[in-house]
Length: 372
Image (cartoon, rainbow, N blue to C red; front, side, top):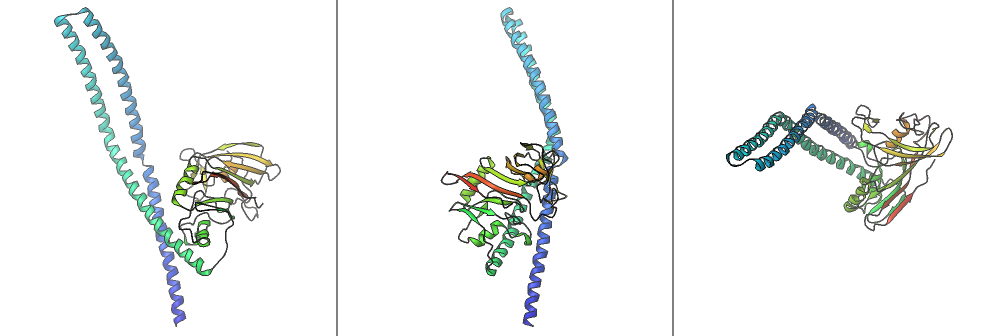
């Protein structure tokens, strides 16, 4: 009876976690969808378009009034040279009235445009306020859920005493660099079954570190050099290096078909496909700019290439290799943008990472040989 009760409690706990996960992810999904909708409200385009029209109209009037002012200034000089007494006073008064009329005309035009723009501005302001509130709610819910399932993962892993220690290339009080294996997430996901990651394993492997945070990411199927900050100060400084593109990252890949170009640069705007996550698409309207420089180091039916991303978009290298506007040669083993063709892994490896130490300011270079 006691054994049956324990099994029942375990089952109930699992069901509860599943139900909570479904509710949380559904709520986060709804928030994300509403945030996207709020960012694409037609009133934003209307406000931007009418604001531009207003600016053009006011600028045209300003230029016209400037020309009229310059003409009045010339007339004032002429009148002072040629007229005297009441005639001079009358002429100057008439010119002043013209100046006042121009001022009134500008004021009336601004008021007319403000009457048109004000309701649009209020709508945009209301939407922006809602965006700020929803982003705050989204962050709070996401962080709470992440901390709950991550704490459960770490506790279970420590209790089970599983090993799976990550190979550490470098370690000090500010920075850890690991050689990430393929098939492992860089950071834990939002779902219970996606908690196994570099960050999660390091929290178990190195419990003496109270702060661990990745400063860049590698796709789950990508292996190689990955840097983790061990303090908030180091994380901020390292993240700033990545944001300023002061970090040099080099990858090696094997492609699934021959390419004609020996070297070059690929620039395509990438956007997350909401219908097929985590797939990324090339979108010239909403996409974020991305650039990859490449060199073919070994030719053949399955050429080896060296890749240096200038930006760090999700799946950037994989899309740039596979897309028809890129090399049209998916990375070998890429089932998302090509075909796995029976291969056991994605043939993409982060071979080198160069950065400046966040505390000592010393240039650091890390290397990892590709396992393929």
